[in-house]
Length: 484
Image (cartoon, rainbow, N blue to C red):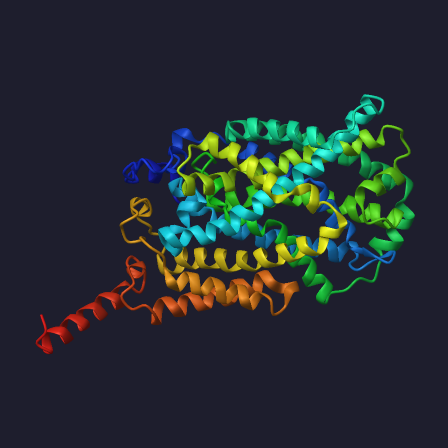
């Protein structure tokens, strides 16, 4: 559906200002949007070209042979990216049309109080990953410092503090700074990856062809599991799609916005997955950092790899792990945006990242990922059903900011459906996201229609007339019984 977004934003009734809500959480008007289409593409390339995604590509090679060949790998990637781009473009529409952030969008389904639970499902994991990624980046920065200083400097904690200060400083300027940082880092990293790709192709093409390109592979569970793993990397990000689309300049159709996600994600993942799989095939090493050292015989390889990690960490954190939890903290604590950015950085210390990076913490970290990921599919499913099916893309934005209005309290149908979907997600962990999303969606429609008859959350939905009819019947029964 094509929408004249600029006109929509300008004519939307502005919600009344509340002293308890920071200015950064109010709808972003067209004149205040700073990110153009090209910057948006670079932003998602910068987010995608990182060591974690390269490791995903390396994970395809098990016991010296790839579980998926090159054709199956890219078929799975295209399917996953297609789904990701579609969900992104669908879930970002409310934020793009009205300028509201994710934490306010949640009120539409979960209510003012209920949105606290669902917003924490996005905020807490982001803060944990913020700390984890920053400690990994600090470790790499420390390696560079050791080489430059001739071994006289070796303090990861100091490097961590420096890196946090840089990231906090950049984040304080919001997307005005993020768009330029992401554009620069994405270009630098892509050029570096092209160099590595050339080295691998010229020196290890035979073994790569044997172990990955021409591998038998599988179209069964490994194929679909890879799609789910791929989607899992974006599950939290496209959940808060409104946080990004509200910064995008107006006048872009829904189809074109879909391409603004598909193209950069395909470029970033296409390169990182390919190099990850090529490195693992050529060396038999699943850790890309160690594999780099094997294939590039250069005394400066440590500096190169470490710089790649540091730049990648900053790029990922700025997009995925700082702004979304900052909005959550701003809403819950009533802090202004900049103090909330600082608090987000401090809270990342509470994740004890120096412990999480240890091998002994791997099982606990995997369990944490499994638990919070189970909620991501259900939440995005509920939001999409609410907006497209129940409300037919018609939302009173002013009501979302009224703590005593239609969305006051919490919506039991959404909260219950979320937990039902999350529980179902554990039935088959490899397909957790899709199972949770489908089950929660069905549960939400059924609960909204058949349960909680007088819920105010039905107002403005396709079930509104049923609520009005039920209310009238109740009043008639009271009058018939003779009670006042």
